[in-house]
Amino acid sequence: MGVSTSSPEKGISVVTVDFPPVNALPVRGWFALADAVRAAGRDAGNRCVVLAAEGRGFNAGVDIKEIQAEGDSALLGANCGCAEAFAAVYECEVPVVAEVHGFCLGGGIGLVGNADAIVASDDATFGLPELDRGALGAATHLSRLVPQHLMRALYYTSRTATAAELHGHGSVWRVVARDRLRPAVLELAREIAGKDGRLIRLAKAAINGIDPVDVRRSYRFEQGFTFEAGLGGTGGRVRNTFGAQSPSGAQASSGAQTPSGAQASSGARDTCDARDTWEAPDGWEARDAFGVQDTLGQEGR
Image 1 (cartoon, rainbow, N blue to C red):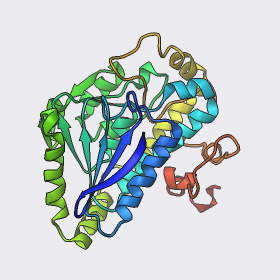
Image 2: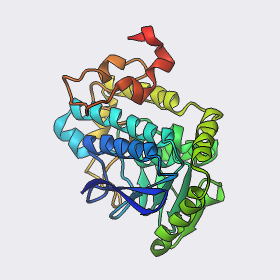
Image 3: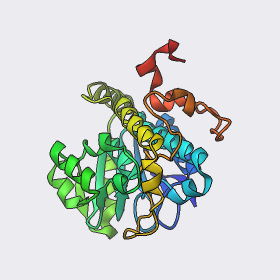
């Protein structure tokens, strides 16, 4: 259980998440995932990273039960951990292929929305149940998967879209039967890994550089509204209804959960630096996860 890394073929690294029963990641899971993806990208021998998961579904977001049990400290850790994991996928030095099966919800959307390509099984569904969890966030990433108006409708209703629907919108590379998922993923990864290692890294940096949306800043902006919902008490009130009506298989929400208290917002840099309230992994810096230097500048501290 946890996050592991394997190398099935030369030039390909597979980062696998395994947090039973539904891959609703605890705080430590998001940071472990970020560390694993960044390490795989830094490995000079790798030219493609595959992001995969064991179990019933790809990802069910954050572990809401952890937040309910531990309160604001867990919530703050989840918010910062999600931002770090999403950024790690986007900023990975080599292309990241997401291997998606079952449900991909909340924080899972943040991961696949920042990936370079998605291969999904025919039973895969994608969605943001944020409004049913007292949160806002990851619309930044859902908007990379579906057209703008569909994104809004899915967000406001908490409905999901199928892998086939996303394939129709061009965001999913291939849809295959569950038992053919890994071979299909490795086929794409192998083709990517066949390119010159230096050139593929330059290509990743170049494509990120021309992205019309700064995904880190955009997600950070969304978290500000999550913070507002928390301060007003709405976020906590809605989140505390979780468990009364359990969705099919997925028990958690996204990377933008908020308590009836504090969470990382567009103006809450000090909150994410408050390490006396939660234990940050060694070497982690909040400004790296949220891109604060982009929004506040060096003097923003």
